[in-house]
Length: 197
Image (cartoon, rainbow, N blue to C red; front, side):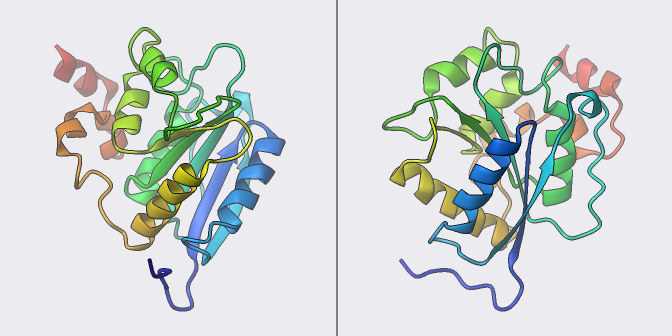
């Protein structure tokens, strides 16, 4: 396959995590992805006390956002009790849906993500948005580094973000699973709850 080219302007990717080690490892992985070498990666170390009501104050154009979380203890990613729900909402809006959630310390030898782990989070874990993100290829899990299959998927995600494609274009069956407040700037939570009734 040919390597995509974007001319002079590199793809703007923001990596966010609570852990500095995860930030530097993901930055290194993205910078060395052969399928899409023209990335300008910036990082943002998140603080737990800033996650609720998080605002992404990034004046620069942003094509993709990656949230990296180390899988240890109870994993609370999305929805009501999720650490990253507000972060993902802001990133989704800023990038037009080009977000990726990466769970490290979750060995996944022959797939893009640990299906049992993700199904547990989406079902019994009360995080259906994590399930939706996995259905559209926006969740990857690995131990310390991506597999060749995951590297290929990462390259495809970067390419899609570079072309400004709609991440839901091939996944219209999950459109109704995207939280309404992710789609509208100031959608009231009440509207979202009423849709569930």
